[in-house]
Image (tube, rainbow over all chains, first blue to last red; front, side, top):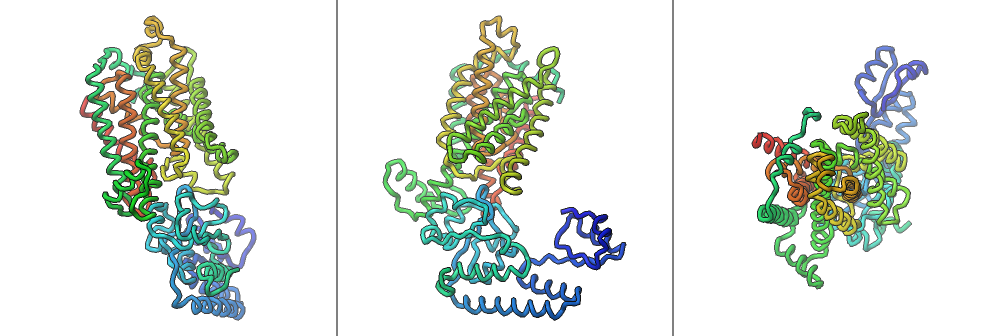
Amino acid sequence: MRPSIESIVALKPDLVIASTASQLEQFVRNLDQVGIPVYVSNPQNIDGVLSSIDSIGELTDTTARASGLTKELRGRIKAVEIRVAGAARPRVFLILGREPLITAGGGTFISDIIARAGGQSISSNEKAAYPQYSLETVVAQRPEVILIQDGERELPDRLQQTPAAREGRVYHFDDGVLLRPGPRIVNGLEQMAAKLHPELFGRE
Amino acid sequence: MNVTDTPNAVRHIASANRVTLAQLVVALTLLALLVIVLAVIATAVGSEHVSLASISKIIIAGITGRSADVTPEQQIIIAEIRLPRVLMAVVVGGALSVAGAAYQALLRNPLADPYILGVSTGAAVGAIVSTVFAESIPVGRPLAAFIGAVLTITAVYALGQGRRGEASERLILAGVITNTFLSSIVIFMLTAASGSRLRSIFSWLIGDLSGEPRLLGLVTVFVMAGIVVIYMNARALNLLMTGEEEAVALGVEVRRVKITVYLAASLITGAAVAVSGVIGFVGLVIPHAIRLVGGSDNRLVIPASALAGGALLLAADTVARTIIAPRELHIGVISALIGGPVFIYLLRRTS
């Protein structure tokens, strides 16, 4: 993304909050020169989301509301973690793209959510964020749950014999809830936990 | 490279070092063995280990129609993932190389190949159109790719005509421009159709063989038929390479041969692109390498290109799917990395 500095200055903002932008450093420096403060928030996991909510609360003099929100969110996260603690962790495979097969690596947001929801992602050892992945590795790892990003079509033919497909545990997910760093991420965590552990949360 | 000079290939053919049947048999046998050895290696390696014993059990069971005593995962990995992909690489590599050899002979231009002329990208446009609008018709994708390829080569040929007949650099420039134009159409269509799915766009434009092998049988039939048709015109192409007037004088039905070979080359390009996206370089490098080693008699160049192209793409794809396993690379990257140095070596060795 390449935001227009001119349009931003014309709006006379008291604070600019940015996640990513092309040439982010130059962008921040330019706004700094005209006296507009910039807060860069690009959390990579759930803890990062909570701390950026707190920071934005401080920056906007709404500390009380922010900490109220993070307290509530922390409580909900804790509740999920307590429920899944000790349960068997199903092997999960995530499909972000079907042809070619794209998944998410270990350092990503969604990988954190899968882990906290009591699952283990097949590709969690992968360092690249969104690698093109080997289909035969997926077959060999026998995923018990497969998650497909909304908008991608049905499961690839050659994953039809995986435990996930045979047991009807292939789910589509909404990327707005699972991939965007905001308070809704906790809804995503709760939905994920329910899908990974229907025995603990009951089928929806 | 100065494309207006009489190309090496043409000079070669003018002095017509015709191959004998014995030379042809030896060369094709050696290349076929190379393909078989590579196919065995490619089937044996992958991101997951499957023992050679299990692989042979699966193949024997496949031939005899019984079920093999292996895990279901091993069965899927070998029979449904690796073997179809090995075959796909050979078919696509053979198709692109023969198409390259055919275009080079027809256009009497050493730089002609399905990628540089824009034919591959034209085929990709056709394939994507059919995927977006008529996904349920299996034959639609290679057919639409064929139509895209024919329209592109016709447009490039028309654009490449100068006032004084064909001009080499005009033709190549027309191809380069057409290719760029069509690449933009590919990006536009995929962005509009599926909301900025960049990885999918990238796969179409640089080539990828990891897709579902549903079309493999159909594409193999198209490619085999096209190669046979081009091979049947090999002698006529030899004469055509010395010059159109000379060919006419020697009794070649130039118009019929040209149209037939154009259509056949476009058919096999379209069929290959429909399952692999646009893989550059193979169609340029392989026929050249064959000519440098074995002379430019098309009766050798065409079948030898089919086998050598299959071998190169198979090697490239095997590297692409194993070198950073379980991640995969795009095959186009590897085919260029292997093909480039090989080509330079051959060029320097003979000149």
